Image 1: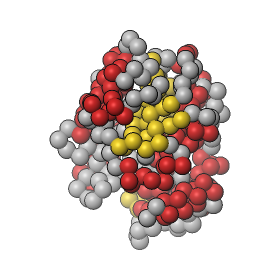
Image 2 (image 1 turned 180 degrees about the horizontal axis):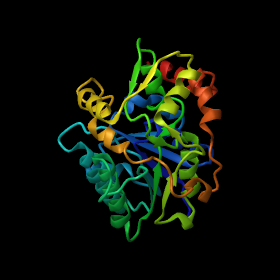
Image 3 (image 1 turned 45 degrees about the vertical axis):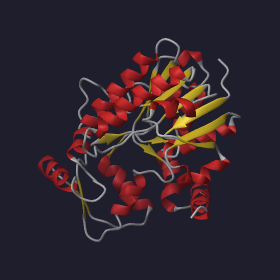
Length: 315
């Protein structure tokens, strides 16, 4: 299979930007499909921007024209109501697969989530991600070779994990932390991007599901203390018992941005730890949070500073 042009659906987000850069550096031509191209002009140095509504089958099929492969990255952590988990994680996947068939795209890489399971996922988020992953593989046959990836929480410059807690640590007073004993194996965004790139033309990955984790496992409290240490925040962190964690989720789901919801609480009840080493299977040595995370949190990472300058230049 020879692939030259790749379309990214959800390519303007945190992970998509890293994947697009990695693919460009390997000589591929990338196309980012977005509903609002004018908001992402900084991507023009990396990829072609094509404006289309991915929920509109005709628009998406046209946008996929002349592409050999597609990468689907769209996902949300919080349900905005009116079945948005199902709409984004299942119905959109169905539309992507159908449009790939119609546009004669032969390869699809799909972003799922660790512990995604249609039947037994501990949260609506994980169940909907599992259903979408199943649909991608089932509807892809025949004619569309599908590979899916199941990462633990992804860290890197501009992520929504390390940076969210770094922001919370700036708020005066103690930090009440829900689910302090939840276990996670954070995976570096650069390793995730490499996993997508390595799998793209490798026939051995067709039909496979890859779990992606970093080399260390932490409790949530250990991670927050790590962030506090490397951002210079001297903060009292109070781990909440289970009843208080559930209470916090029931209250914060109504706060702006929904910082913590009952569904987030349910997701954290399942350890975000890999049972299989997907990175090793793809020939990747995982990057340690202890090494890379310090650069991001201290603001000394060159890529992070470069990205910030690019965003400012587009304002």
